[in-house]
Amino acid sequence: VQLQASGGGLAQPGGYLTLSCSIADGTSSVLPKAWFRQAPGKEREFVGATTWNGESTRYADSVKERFSILRDNTRNTVKLQMNNLQLEDTAVYFCAADASKTTVLMTLSTWYDYWGQGTLVTVSS
Image (cartoon, rainbow, N blue to C red; front, top):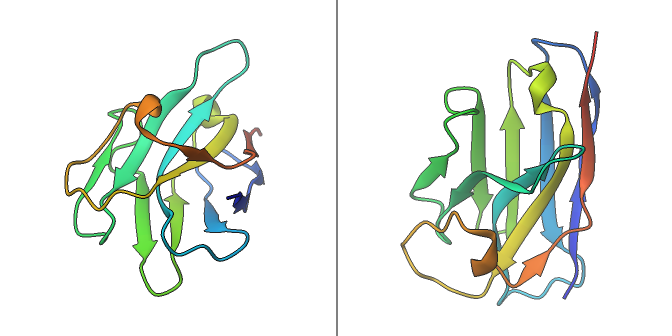
């Protein structure tokens, strides 16, 4: 199972980007539902997660009020809408997935079984 992430790029401070993640081969039992990021020289950190049905979400404090995670059950995709981007948002962003339909929001990377290849987001003036 391969996750396919897209939408990264260059943005100015205060700008916006939308990341998308889907299953490359269309496997419907694997559910993309979370985003993590890794800045240069830092460990991978949680950004946001949603439940399999998209009804609940959770965000890292650093992105709360600026980022939104949206899950489309019909297309089995997850998006990360990033607004008011800041320099410190520069990182490689990874989408994560598992096959669980738990309603508990998982913020630990070790929970997820499947990962995308990462898409680079650079915030610079």
